[in-house]
Each structure stands twice: as structure tokens, then as C-alpha cells.
Length: 184
Length: 137
Image (tube, rainbow over all chains, first blue to last red; front, side, top):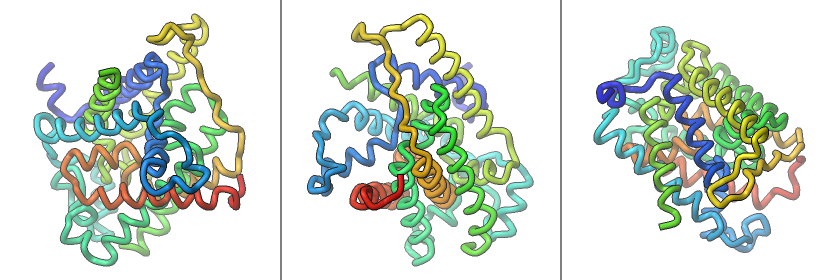
């Protein structure tokens, strides 16, 4: 059991626990949706003059607390569990990524994308900046992210969530198959 | 201490994102190349169990911790914003390799460069708020 928990988790175990998190939030009288925090952060900081951010951010303190927990969870996994061992992606993906100039995984994330030596180049910085901007803009425009739409929304059989998730995949496929060969 | 339960739920969520490797750029690439069942299995299991649970909650009118019936807020039935916003989100998800939750989990895991993604995600949300009235919904 201990070994099982310390190793990378299989999909069925991870997926079941995500459903448990969603039920926990419902039981606490809230809903499971992470990206609302981005809006709350705008309301806390420089967004007050904009109507969309003119609300009392304190009412979302519960979700900001969830966000802080997510970072703590990442640290616990790094320090005591997963530890950043190489991600066992399929051989086909390793081959595809090699054609774009990526070496096989040596840890959780590619240093080609997240290592500071690459982030501090213009291209490396732009990848993270543009990627983040699109995520933040798109999630609020769509009205949710993977947690709010794909998990909470689909579980509640919401048609707008299905449309948004189809959009997630159109965007992801275009980026991966059409734009990655131009970027890398 | 009334927020402790949310801190705990968030911590477990962060551990799940990391232990399942859903926070990994590699897993997102593998997903968008249809080369492994892993990510589909994670999301699919969560949705199937989630839908079953939501059905049971509605059927038996389950109450929350405060004794109130659990409410489900329907998503707005606006299709242009759902598909356009979704596509924009998907482009960013594949480019950065992370959706909002895992961005934060990555920072905790030690990938400090994810703070750039986080700052620009906040700026992206801010930009949406500024131009909201001019966008088709």
C-alpha cells in the first residue's frame, strides 16, 4: 500500500480521487472550479476599476485556500512521494518529441520548456508567457477550465461544458500538430 | 480554521495532480497525440464517477455540511463563448503544458518558471475582463 502511494498513480486511482475532491467541495457547499481564482486575484490586486473584477474577493477566500493547498500538495509529492522521476510516456510520444528536438524525459517536466536557461531566452519566455495568457483569457471566456467544465460540468451533464471541452481539444490539437512544428 | 478543510482538499488535489503526472507537459503532449490512455482514463474515470454521484445527490436530495440541499449552478447556455473560449484555452493548455490547477501544483513541485505562466494567466483573465463587453458571447 505504501509503495503503491509513493509510486506514480494509475489513471483509475487518480480519476476516482478527483471525483472525491469534487464531492468534498459540493459537501462543503462550494463547487470544484480552479480558474475562478485567477479572477479573484485580479479583484484582489489591479482589477478593481474594471466592472468584471469589482466584487469582494474575500467571498472567494475558500478557493484561494484551495489554491495554496494545491501548491503544498505539489511540494509534498516532490519531497516525499513522486520525487520527479522520469515520466513514463509512450515510445511513440518520445519519438514524436525527438523529431521536434526534445530529449526523452529525465524528470517530471522538460528542461527545454521549464529550465531557466531556456526560459531566459526570448523564445523560451514567449512560450510560457503566451501559453499562460491564452489559458487565463480562454478559461474565463469559456466560463471554466478542466476542473469547472471537464469535471464538474460534464458530471452535471452540462451541454455548454461539452462544447467547451470540444473547444479545449480543437485548440490543443491545432497547437500540438500544426503550431508545434513551427515553434520547435 | 473554517478554511482548513479547503486547504486540506487543495493539498490532496495537488498530490493527485502530481502523483498522476497530470501536471506534466509530457502527459499533455501524449494526450493530444492520442498515444496513451492515461489522461483519458483519469478524466474519464472522474467524469463517470462524478456523473453517478451527482445523479445520486439529486435523486436523494443530499444535504451539505450546513444542512442545505446541494445546489448545482447550471453553466450559461452561450455557445460562441464556450467554443471560442475553449479553443483559446486549448491552445494555451498545449503550449504551456498546464491548465490552471497544475500551474500552481508545478510551482509547489519546484518548477519556479511556472510563475511566469501564472502571472500571464492572471493577465489573460484581466484582459478578458477589460474587453468582455466587446467580445461575442
